[in-house]
Image (cartoon, rainbow, N blue to C red):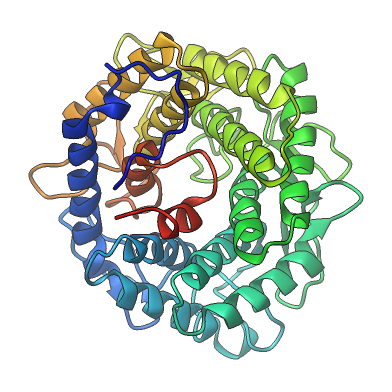
Length: 422
């Protein structure tokens, strides 16, 4: 892929300019794409076990399907064989068996006759990924993608977006009743990414403004006041729920306490939003860079090697002391992505050191050269574990980590790939 870094601040010695390093990233990304291809099932994509085979009783998962559709659509834009048909399969699945044809929207699994999985609800987290997947598929001209994007944005805007609050609501029952008394940072974080992608694809700047409003509330107000730690759990009146899921410290989406991996993930999203705003209108709030720097520093201080072993741990308490020491793969991927984004934006040597340190860790501990893919999770001693997550991870975090160093901060993935030389 052609050099896409406009910054003149990057030193010639940076890994980001190194041709061998960029080839290594390309190779690792293609290994991940090939490893994940067996996750295709009739109704979408399903989870893989440690050996890269479908797990016993595996069935289509809507979140996984949306994320795989997004990744394979972007990969198709790079001219990689086999990826466009998989993206098309994902679009067809999201339009078909995974969609609630009675009430609109999506459940986390197959939804026959408008009835989702037992106890299932319609989650903002999932709908953000459906919008992201649809926007990426539109860029590649995947059949049905325009219909999927139109449907996804109508649902997302009508039911989830709260204009008064400037955030997305969390969840509803099948018929859009029974709104959950909860406001979550995680779903809104992924909504920021999806909003930027949708703005690039549709040309509608309202989605970019919504991304900025989310960031203003959750980061520039709430997290900034907390020293750039990111509290995640609130009720609908924005009262912080400090005891939320205290009995579920290893919950995979809403764990007790705070998640340093999210601090650093927000960091690079702020830089991407700054770049998107500058590209679209020539100006962006100055505090986006300041907050991004603060989030990365707080995230690495709170989460990296806190128990004497390398790696970014899962959660900390309100005193920033470790709660769950395990190292999920996605935390490392997002920390690396944030270091790369800060390096591109500032040229500071500190971020080059972090970029190399995190990739060294991923290479030596996370990449599974025996069975393929990345290990989903390691324990505090960096041994394979399955306390929070089981099996092998889907492509979303790991594959994007291999691609983001090759791309500019804006536009978003699919659009950036579409306008660059292969």
